[in-house]
Length: 310
Image 1 (cartoon, rainbow, N blue to C red):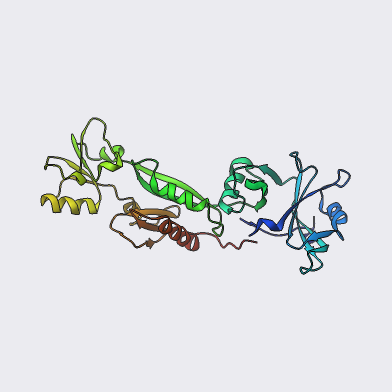
Image 2: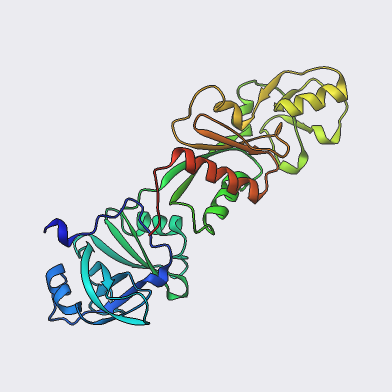
């Protein structure tokens, strides 16, 4: 195979609009190699939006698939003859996956389908929601770790991050990985018979110990605070002192050294603003989806590979 027959695209190449991807049924007597496909397709009319062609034997039956890039004689008329055919991925490196619930306009969704359904494939064509078809070439999603404290469950910040990623078309492929700290595990750092948690709404419990909640302003007792700087400030305001404390601030773990992976975290001392450091971004404790979307973009811009959708 020569350089003239293959299109160099990837990693994470995704056509910006799936209307530029068409599926073509190729006769069985035409091999799915670039030379044969070129001979079959040159001179045939193609729709003015079509840039990539998924070549298959039968659109309704799984089977060998090739991904091509085509050039038309003109972009002006609604149909124009094909003047060039180049190979993106041949049948030995291309997979066709039907995933009815996948939104194929979302790069991160395409990357997740490729990871789960076609690991190792260089190019993955996905037929998803609304029967729309799109493709990802050399999927290498950026791994973003989301640090959170549980309960409550599900963990809010990872859930928010996944919800944002699942509907965002102009982010490169991202994989959200939750890194959860459990209150019961944190309590083991300072064994006590009585713990004070920030609020009852979190549903936090520590097995084998009495639990009180700071937001209920209970009568002062001999307890250990499972909280953060803001909880300590409120305790000082209520009671005039500082109890033994296990600091569960998710941001604390990334403030001293660069994390191994790009990290999204949170801090209750941030009321409306977003902070960032070396390899991390932190949102307010009560972050909105807009906060999370902005933070993810900041991480991608600073930590992700260069990405230009096709």
